[in-house]
Image (cartoon, rainbow, N blue to C red; front, side):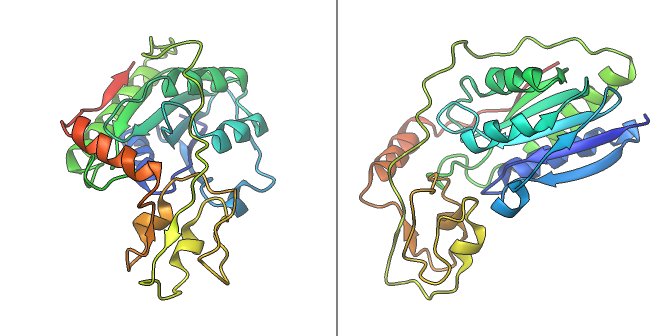
Length: 259
């Protein structure tokens, strides 16, 4: 295949990155020039634009936030010109449900000039709780993602570009991911600055990491990354949501793919 394989992802807690790259690994037989496009950090998103063409393929990895595509990523797609390139949305959700996140992304990609030829919904450890989807994507998830990528490559190699029938609803579920809560910082904090470094929205003041502004999207990257467990949503509704998830979403869910 003469063309590019663009692996595009927004991945605050790394689960979407791992899954998208595994899908791309499975597509290696296409022989396309690989582009690794990480849109997680603000500096990567500043002045971002991308133009692809009909011979190219894009894998788009992203977390599911309350059943929807993260707003920050949806807005960025306005700066992308698909040019008829094939697209593969890869949604990663926290073992509850991906709801409308695949159909929404498919619509966004269609508007950007892509042809969606396949899609997948995979599981990652939930951002609100380490006890839901613990340590996922695991080895079995990665294996499934690679196999899915190989199936997509075989479809494209056979000259097929039909659109898959996706699970999800239109109109989409109401966007509820903009939560008015920010993490607290406990006395365990050592001012190492890891939380400010990993924040995808630059919402944490690197000089005083106890200061978190309204750009916070409650992705929990800081909570997951803090070596002292000093960032927390304890005593907020997010903590309550985590307990509900632990009670109701403990049974392992498997990847769903659409070809």
